Image (cartoon, rainbow, N blue to C red; front, side, top):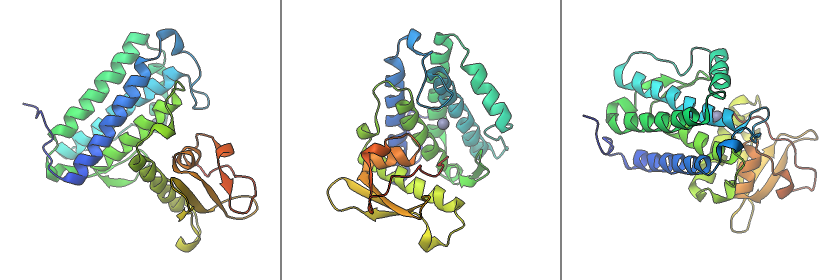
Amino acid sequence: MPARTDRTTDPELLAALLLARRGQAYFSRALNELRTSELGAPSLVPGWLRRHVVAHVGLNARALTRLTQWAATGVETPMYASPEERDAEIELGATLPARALRNLSAHAAVHLDVEWRDLADDAWHAQVRTAQGRVVPASETVWMRTREVWIHAVDLDHGASFRHFPPELVDLLLADVVRVWGSRQDAPPEARTALGAAGGAGLRALDRVPAPGGPVTVRGRAADLARWATGRGGAHLLTTADGSPVPEPPRWL
Ligand code: ZN
């Protein structure tokens, strides 16, 4: 019998699950508000229609479900067989009739959520491997899903915005960006991008962002900074400490 409530009682994990579920609701609402005729319009992801975003988010839930099943059973089941297979599946998914596409999105999300509810505490700590090859505890699937659903809701380009995100989510995104950028830079830790103080309520800064003329400090509203740093534009909403142009952000994911 599937549990009706989460088996874990870890308060941190329960808070993380709540943020993922709020994100799923946010994404689903944005999708529901799109008429079928609007699904064929471009999304904010270069080269992707909204249909691709919907297919990808549904398939991502399935891939993360494979990781939770791996954690629950100990039987290795990777997210995707290969990057090529992942991309081919998205292309194929994007061609589904609208109703099937909406079903994929809804059912995959529910399935993942059922897996999460049923996961025992020790399984949450089991090690699994992400599509990028990182070895992480199964609990990381919650954050992986969280950033997908919230940001891809914005990518649907139908009213969702980083400025609607809960402040704690914006903080987590900025921390994730700093972590990912740092993991790629050769620079010593003290020379890597870090969160800085920008002075003023709601303002944040990213210090030592790589730029063509040398590292710069980029400042702005936390939500706008997270938007730009995750590759979703909005550089015009930000400033640099020395007045130089806001650079292109390094790749995030
Ligand atoms: Zn994605």
